[in-house]
Length: 85
Image 1: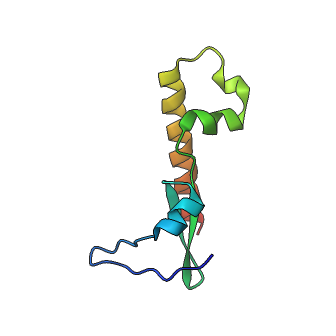
Image 2 (image 1 turned 90 degrees about the vertical axis):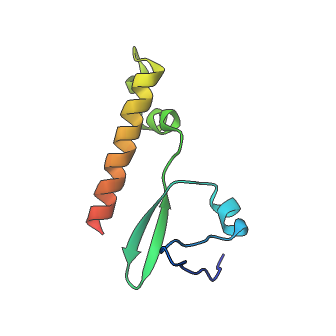
């Protein structure tokens, strides 16, 4: 799917509704790649993201603790990916 998009005066890019519905993600990592930008989705639900990493991490921890750990892991991974590119 391709759409032409524009930057506004503040440097924001508006993604048309059709693209937003197609992506189904609200948090994306933007990577400069060649002469363009690559958008990679990040899980919004930290519990779901953590569950994908392994069920052992879910044992004997509160939901609050799990959310904090998952958010930290997601943010750290995103920063590492951005710095690599």
